[in-house]
Image (cartoon, rainbow, N blue to C red; front, side):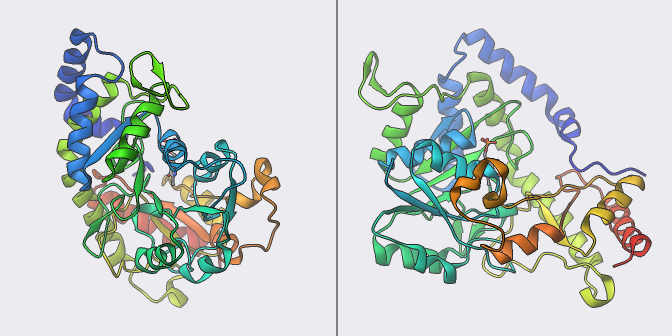
Length: 374
Ligand SMILES: *Cc1c(COP(=O)(O)O)cnc(C)c1O
């Protein structure tokens, strides 16, 4: 049996009729950009997340960019985030002209280390951006405590964390704004690009909504910096359909992860596999299920030969990316991130992953480790 890393077609087949009818309605309405389907989705998504407002945009990257601009961040400012994230988190900071300051991740949950955070804060720090990596919230209580002590706003990069919780609060609701991506492979994926900024602050929501549409709060008056970051009507309609299924899909991801947990429960010294640590303070939404092994590249290659596709998220920390050397950090700057990226494998993870596919994946992982050695 072969196991794909992700299977978006199967999910589409399960909701095909609903999707096609929603798209037809949008096309018949002639509202191709923003419009009622996007507004309905924004309302639905804000109530799913647990904020007063959601503003739909054309990507998660745009959501981050507009969140920073809404706080007035620009050249001369500093924004703190992590090196172990998708490159977009840092790219969006740099779009504003601000400097990205990085802090290492903690070695257990792979998210922003609160211990490393405080010493990087300066008088120029304008925002702190924890990333809820793989679907698990960063350790927000100490991060928010430090941020509040210094009066610095927190923006959550929740692009991987639709449906995750931390001490009873939803991902995206704990900072002044939360940023989501609806890239097709995310927990809630459009059939194209999409993103959203969520917030309880009406002023920030209005600013983001204006800036996504050329800075217009009143049509024809471009009062704010303007971008073409609007969500398409068809994507709003598709996301509206998929939102109705999201809670179940997240439960299915968690069930698939629990099956992996059980199969991988031996001591790492014996199995050669370090499974994800249990999530102590909330619900992990399992965008990705990431284990650590020695000889990662050889293990992955062997798994691929045996028919199981895997991923690496991410192979190189942001500060070592060729396009980002001017961040000013060299090798050795973030030892935890640098060590982590050499060991991680993302196992197949999607709501429809069957018990049999999960078992094949684990058997194949064990076989690959036996074949390539540790
Ligand atoms: C996917 C992702 C983004 C960017 O979202 P896009 O919709 O692809 O622009 C930002 N941050 C993280 C952590 C992501 O995983």
